[in-house]
Amino acid sequence: MSSLNLTSTHAGALEAAAEVEGRSLWQDAWRRLRSNRAAYVSMIILAIVALACVALPYALPWAYDAIDWDHVEAMPPNFELGHYLGTDSVGRDLLARTLVGGRISLMVGVLATLVALLIGVTVGAVAGYLGGRVDQLLMRFVDLLYSVPLTFFVIILMVMFGRNFILMFLAIGAVEWLTMARIVRGQTLSLKNKEFIEAARASGGSTFSIIARHIVPNVLGVVIVYVTLTIPQVILLESFLSFLGLGVQEPLTSWGVLLNEGAAELEANPRTLIVPAVFMTVTLFCFNFIGDGLRDALDPKDR
Amino acid sequence: MWSYFARRLLIGVPTLFAVVLFCFFLMRLAPGGPFDGEAPVPPEVLANLRARYHLDDPLWQQFFSYLGNLLRGDFGPSFKYKDFTVTELIAQGLPVSIENGLSALFIAILIGLPLGITAALSQNTARDYAVSGLSMIGIVIPTFVTGQILILAFGVWLRCTPFQLPAGGWNDGAFANRILPVTVLALPFIAYIARISRASMIEALRANFVRTARAKGLPYRTVILRHALKTALMPVVTFLGPATAFILTGSMVVETIFQIPGIGRYFVQGALNRDYTLVMGVTIVGAAFVIIANIIVDMIYGVLDPKVRYE
Image 1 (cartoon, each protein chain N blue to C red):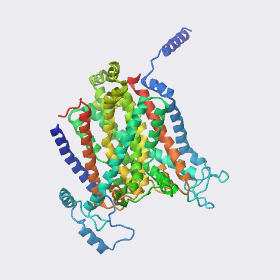
Image 2: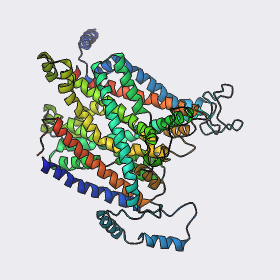
Image 3: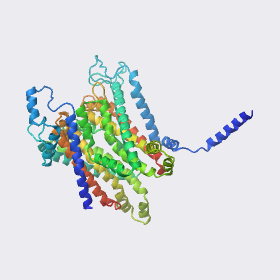
Image 4: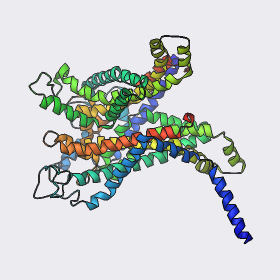
């Protein structure tokens, strides 16, 4: 009986505590992000597009690489045959191709950005935290790479080692990390003299664990903004590579490949350009709005 | 100040050296060579070709002879354009690309800057949203798509009207042949510059020194043009460094679509044909341009920002 009573008062105390509970930075940011209408709508649209790209191709009557042999020409939308957005010039279902292409484009965007994130955050945090000669060396290296037209190197790599999906996102990631490294270094510099870092050091944390457990989680806010702004850049770079004929190989496709095909036969069937262009434009728009929204939401100055 | 820039230029030399080194070994280590075409070359011919281009020498020897020639301004013979040296090809293509790139940049500043500033001055109005929306479209749609659309519009649909424009070819740089490619090249830059200048102008307008300028009764025009604009220009200037690299890649697309004999097109064709020497030549020249552009940006920065001191 008494224990029951204790529990209930305990629960009451907890409830009271919950009412005045402080909001964490992330909860606060989430609240602010949700109140930004453009960013919120963008998140919903992006989720729908991503989900459609991943799941919808399985539910469509036509596979992305299946040729409709009865209609081997560009055909306007035909619901009876199951070509909801028509076919391309060799009779493949345009909707299926656009969705599978979106899957590839989004995958390249996300994976390349992850590669960039890994390199950039590591280099930036290490340079900023260690300072001194390591910092000098790493940042001079970043400066050096900044003054080189890196797209050239991606092209050379793709030409030399063939059109390879893994190489593509690795190469793009390897050139997109520079800004990330600079941003993270700047943040780390301002963090490393804070009391909690000093406390961690005083309690015997190793350099590695301080960087991994105290520095990195605290720069994530800035990093996440930059991630949402890097993904669209990578998708654009992928479309540029596709234009040069260095994109993913047929019958696999990406938005860049589809745009390139569509642009070539724009006069005969504009639909083959418009459909992938709309998908890609909307997606990149969403990423940009979310990035802007996140920046506003996470900016501590703007509170 | 001059010693600072002399030093920056000197730092550019090892950077360029690193570019040459990296390019050279990347190209040579990659599988496949410039002579594996569609039809296989007989082994005797291949041996002769390899001897002709010194491809059988030890790698380091090839590298140093290439470096030596480079210092004399000789980029070596092109593997695919048999009658030309790479130096000749670059000498032909570079002026074309520079002219187009500079025109595009000039137009982009001329249009993008006022757009961004008006958007900032009327923040959160229909005009602001229009500029922001349009500039996002300009950034998000790839150049090769806008290029094809403009070709179709002005070269095909408007044929036989006064608005028809040559949709391709160079015609020795006739004005009409330049309009479309320069427009396509400029569009994403207009968008970027409008976006950047809008953001920086909004920030400048909130700054204390602008409030002071207004408080002491200066006319609105003066506050905007003399006080806010100067600060707002700095991020735009910073963008001009990376913009040079952007223009290089943009020129690859534009020169390919419009069949313009610039270095961007040579690079694309060289890359697709594994024309090692040509690709390296263009990459080195491109890198040199980006390095110089970054130094120029730093100089402009010093003029605009009194806080910057060169040691």
